[in-house]
Image: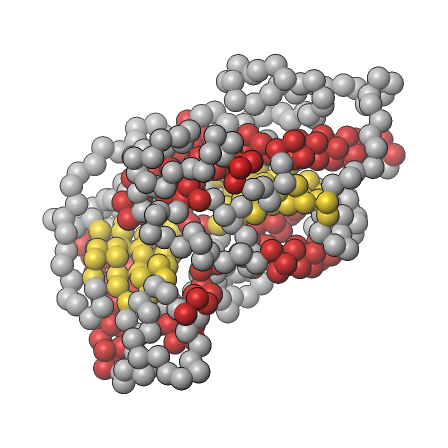
Length: 449
């Protein structure tokens, strides 16, 4: 039987295929698409709505008719804003909840003042786009998708979450580009016609906010532990959070699930938007939303790649905030993982369903590229390691031996680009001197039936 994943190929080495032990898959069924959409109706958050709901996670909404004279009149917002924009900058949980209440109230006022067309507008609620900052086109595409779906209230979180970094990972050096992030959001707000133009929001005024809290606000009981054995208030989603990326980074998905649960409770969005590049993360979040009965829809937007067109499609490296570490030489070779996954996809498209026929096509691309780099002069070559290439169930990330053609599968992998071993004077090595860079990518194999 062919191994379920190809793993641990150091630079220029021959493969050592490790058989995977059987795992018990999650049994609850989940949607086959990358959207989880429980039905719900949203109402406004108003002061005094503190009674628990039946599921005990979110406050009950108190609905007051707009014509009711008892409805409090709101003063002009006093939030910090991104310069030259009305985009609010929120630093505390209290500020987020105040902003949410104000924009909901403002929406209702607009509907009353602007005629029947706006009164009939279907309020989509708040859209949340969670990020760690260092914004790039992939993040902006998520915001555009939220507006395209009718959201005129969008919250973008910018928070480098320490709980999802291991003790030996790049928390301290992770790119932090606040001024650049603000500039990108300012330009996007103008592009989207934030004042009520034709940027995709149906002519309605776009309300945006950035939630950029300090760690003391997000973790009021103290700095979150980064060890597997650390104590604290954590959310763990297993077994999916222990597989593949979870095996390589044991605290990663615990940190992701924990911070997302916090953000979901703070912002109370109707939809949350994630990129497909972190495909296992999207499976973890969909599982959490389903299993905890969180009243929101998880929307996954296709990966945006370097050199891509307006639709985000392309053949280049998947956009990532960590790409700044690569430098010119390693960036040239970094798309090897995506090329390998595309070769495996071609095998599937050609009729192969067995992992023993699909995964070797990807491995060949990786080994050929390693050989090519080995033959180059030291001043031009690039060293990298293949950590794994996996063929997995689309709902659980459990690795499979055979693709069910009625369900498809997820091809994913990880490579580590090693530091340039013969740097030249004046060479662009990347940010922070070009440390090792771990890159992930994936391709969705669609159902054939």
